[in-house]
Image (cartoon, rainbow, N blue to C red; front, side, top):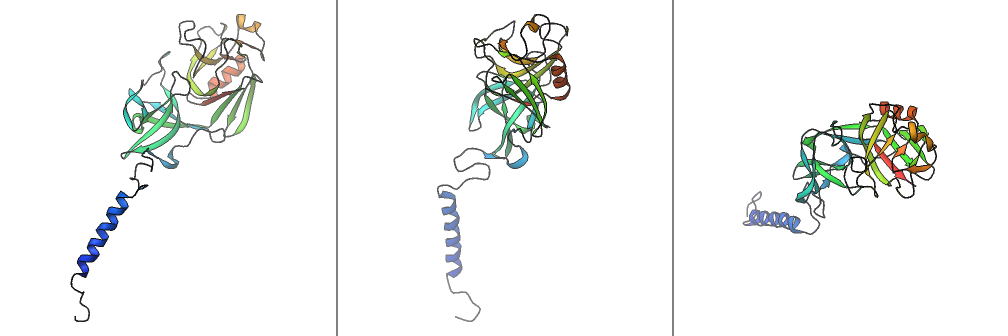
Amino acid sequence: MNRGQTAPGRTGRISILLAMAVLVAILLPGSASADTSSSGEPAEAGAAVSAPSRAQGATVARIVTPVLARTSLTRPHGGHRLQAQTGWSGQAQYLLVLAGAVQRDREWVKVLLPSRPNGSAGWVPRDKVVLDHTPYWVQVSTGSRQVTVFREGRRIRGFRAVVGAPATPTPHGLGAIYERDPQPDPHGFVGPWVLALTLLSDKLHHFEGGEGRVGIHGRDGASLLDPLGSARSHGCIRIANAAVRWMAAHVPAGTPVRVAG
């Protein structure tokens, strides 16, 4: 063998070894493709979408075209049909984003659904929504009967409230502002504004022509007989008219609302 020459068959053996290494890497348990985790579930989309938090606010998705919100990304069938407008007053539909993922090179966002059971969520393609951000977080305490508004983690407003009576309690859990509805009669029972939530009553599936949707609203007329700080509503959260006007002017649709004891 002359100096500088490769031994006969050596190049072929190296090629075979490289091919075997690639094959083992593919077949080894725990290896995952670029768009799935080791469990086969979609890989998270990174820092583009953060989970909602009191400190940072939340990502909000405006639905721009009718779309099926899938229950699972790994099962394409089954889910909740979403429209570009809300079901009650036909406003642009903004939903709270809970997470993001990539599946087969397509981006998806997981949104909180305005339907029963409370807390239901679904995955929609990123290209079917427009993302925005809200710096606000609303905390409702049914124990202290208080509504607290945070902006980027800082408490900026606090309001006394009427919450659900023991027979028709305000449902607990994470919800979001679904609609912001000005009232034709600002001196009616619910005051000047109703901020409908994605949360629905666990006791009333039908109420005054609706599906038992819970809201934050004002108070006037007969509702003034129930003092702030009491538990006497059908599940809605009543606050002073000045307070609900402030919330309607500052807190956008899609803002997270956490209800707890």
